[in-house]
Length: 142
Image (cartoon, rainbow, N blue to C red; front, side, top):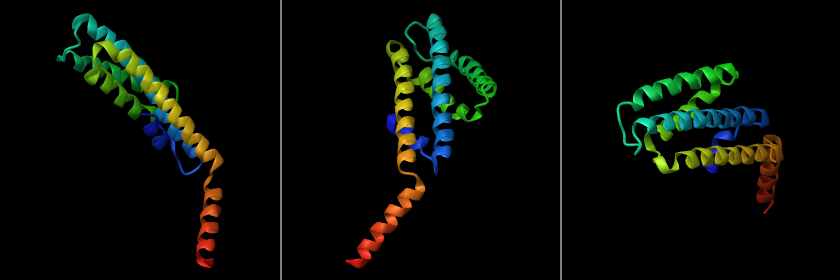
């Protein structure tokens, strides 16, 4: 998942990477915490975590809270990645691992975003284009 965070965190420049990576990280964190809370409430009714139609209202409430939270923090780009992790936690995570899974997703996404930011910081587009042009010139000379 760190790789996914790095790919989605990469932008055309450092500012774009901050925006893309920030959206991904913020959404994953908010969606992860909402998912953990709602799944914990769901386990009260279904201790084994078996699928049930009760997950639908939980998902509805989770998405509404996610949208409101992202709007409140002025980070609407976090809604999509937050919704993804919310669905994964509610529908695909076993009772025994939902907290560890959520926290690992947040950590992995954070690592991936940091990698993307570092790549864009140390290899900005201008520097990369210079390197590629130099390599092309050397190839033509050979």
